[in-house]
Amino acid sequence: MQDTSPFGFAALAALIGMFSREAVQKLKQLAENILAKAEQGKDAAVPRPSVERVDPDSGPTAGGTLVTITGHDFAQEPRVTFGGALATSVHGLSRTKITAVTPAHSHGRVDVIVANPDQQSATRAAGFTFVDPPGSPAAAAGGEPADQRPAPAARPNDVTPT
Image (tube, rainbow, N blue to C red; front, side):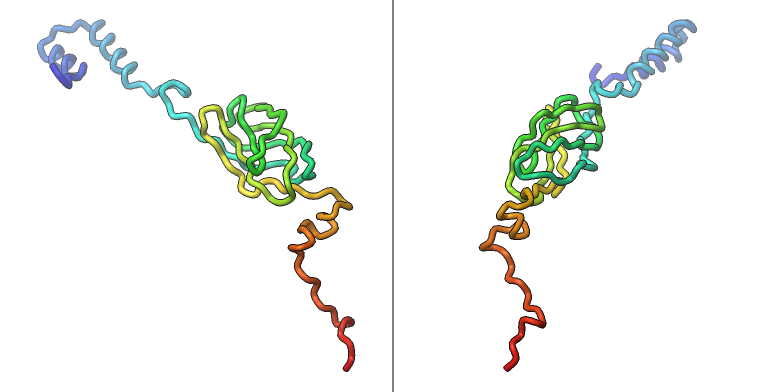
């Protein structure tokens, strides 16, 4: 009796006339339960998270900026990284909102990654920019180390007459 469907037995029994009205009703109920759609979270695929926004989207290289990350399908205890550095004080407020404190990081744009405990993750490419504090050598150089700064463009008044 390999690959035998309960519907085959029901059809055969109905043809023979062996079932009472109550038995047919019970069989129908059994078939509906077998074919019912699985409840969310039970034998269903877990949706992959997504990151839509990081607010604010910039902060100091020293870290310490409280950010709110909005998106979808976040777990209660996600892991958040900024450019590979682990954020602190991460709180999954809901399936759509996380708060976290940025770590210290060198200046520049970095990816923000939210990873759920099931290892599914979402990336907001260049989602946060670390900026040097005003008055620092890097900030005075326009955010670039002095040896990587572009040369200033010549101005018309800089030309000496010949």
